[in-house]
Image (tube, rainbow, N blue to C red):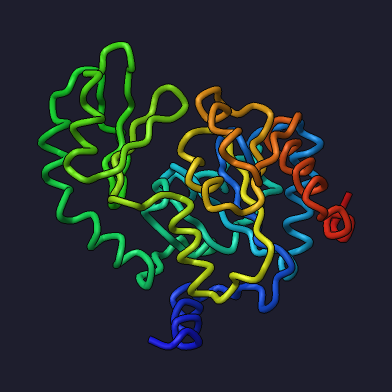
Length: 270
């Protein structure tokens, strides 16, 4: 399919309008990143994102699944946070419209095809394993677990990888089993390719190992100040990633300044 046709098809599947010529693509993890930081900085960033909808294409990239993302906007503490333009959820296994949270089949169908050959085999390998509890959510195109590293079989992740899937252990308590080669970063790259936005500056921000794929894309990265230690260990291998002093939104704002977007930040509410 020709690229202009793919972009048009993507836009039709999203339904809600996307910026026609964004100056920046900002991709933020949620928990520990966009939902953390000093209250004043959270308010500033949320207002700026709301004011700059045409200049900044905002994408959530989260380990949450879609219904959990939807719940955010019912919480009073997130009243200033607007829906993003797009949502990459399930650690990269789902892409949805930020407004309706309806799936974008142009991306999701390929991920589904990658996952199906492994789904049952992964289930068989993980069923009844000590230290693993399936998360009580409808994870899509992946298996998601609450994990206790003290009780887990130390060889389990290696056996899963031998099957051909990818495993991500993050925040000291979550295990995600993903289709091979699928993560937040790979899915982001596919989305930007379909939207023909490869020439637009991109900044990604996160705090745990399930954000590593974002940083490994080579885009400008902001590792927020509250990042977990296992992610910090990767920093020497991520030359285009900035380690912020501030946590959460404070770190995102700091990182945007670091990468030269101070002028764009000044366009919104202070």
